[in-house]
Image (cartoon, rainbow, N blue to C red; front, side):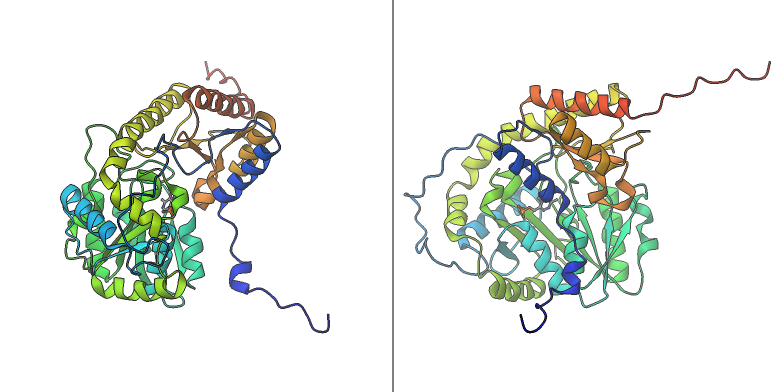
Length: 397
Ligand code: PMP
């Protein structure tokens, strides 16, 4: 070596791995050595789906790039889905881009709106890639601790704030934003000229009898709202990397340029398959989604009965469970649970500094029996690491 080895960027040196993905890589490695891990750390629900048959697809050029806004038929169906189910009119030719996963959709949106030093408000518990993506775009995430009500978010707005990003329903708490909360966020965005980025990746995971209110329906002209969604969770095909975003044409035109320079288009074959089976796949996943949400809420009730608090929520397949008075922080707790009980969860610290007394428990990829074994072990470890309460001293006679 004559000179020094080329260095990596200071920007990326400062950014850690996605904690949930990092944990799951560890779990994959442990499983590969034959260990049986009760996996409550995965960010996906496993569904029984038919093996895909690509033979009958009609879209031409399946082996090739598609239009960089996405396979037109899939865009048309997604636009219709939002328009008919969620009262958000969408022009599939100018107001939508199909992306290689919604992760990429969020990143490209941030890249299209942020200049260096611009701030984005990120309520905790956040989906853990938001702050990293904001930093990767040389912006500055401004975190809001989890106990601050939505109605108080305005105090985090500064002259440099450009956007607010929320995840509705929320991963990891399962919280569904109320109409009043969404209206407040729209007013805030309006008043301060902010973009409201709403990640609706879990919108089908609603408890029975509750309709989902899309944030975009309150801003049908898309003056300040970007809606981001994904086929990953609702269709159970996370590995296919198909997501999408909905925004006004001014913004999608900018995102389109990034998409063209970065990936050209989402996988054509898979997008074409999803277009061909758009409705029948949802018919297959919806009953399974219902069962998964019901399991989530049974586990929530079980935690409550066993003295373990969870952040309020009714949706998704996640629970954000409190460690109460355990002497362990979330990383210590998750590490011990994995080592001693072969059970994986994600430490709450990955979801914000105010969340280190929590762990994320996902019930989407294991049988109920194994979930029960997992949460029982969680309760036992909380109890085993909680100092015994001193008996109350008798008061003055
Ligand atoms: N948003 C949220 C809230 C998520 O939980 C995830 C995946 N865990 C994503 C976006 C990314 O999903 P994908 O890139 O697979 O669409």
